[in-house]
Image (tube, rainbow, N blue to C red):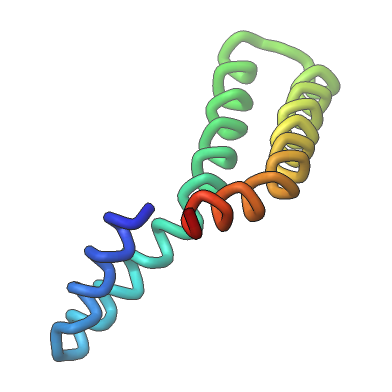
Amino acid sequence: MAGIGFELKRLFRRKGLFATMRAYGYAGIVCTGPMLLGVLLQVGILVLFGLWGVGRANQDLLVCMVTYTLLASLTLTSFFSMPVTRFLADM
C-alpha cells in the first residue's frame, strides 16, 4: 500500500483541473476496489445463473451467502488488521 500512496502523492502534485480529477479518480478506485470486485462477483454469479436457468430463490440465496461471507470476513479481519499494521509500522 505504501507504493500506492507514493504514486498518489506524485499525481496530486501536478497542477490543473484534469490532473486533479485524475488523481481523485485513482484514489477513489483504490479505495473502492475491493467493494467493486465484490459487486462484480455477484453480478457475474447472477449472469451465470440466469444463463443456466437457476431459479430466482436459489440466486438470491447464493447472493446472500456471498454477501454475508464477505461481510463477516471484513469484520473479523478489521479487528486485527489495524493493530497489527500499526505495530509492524512502528517496529
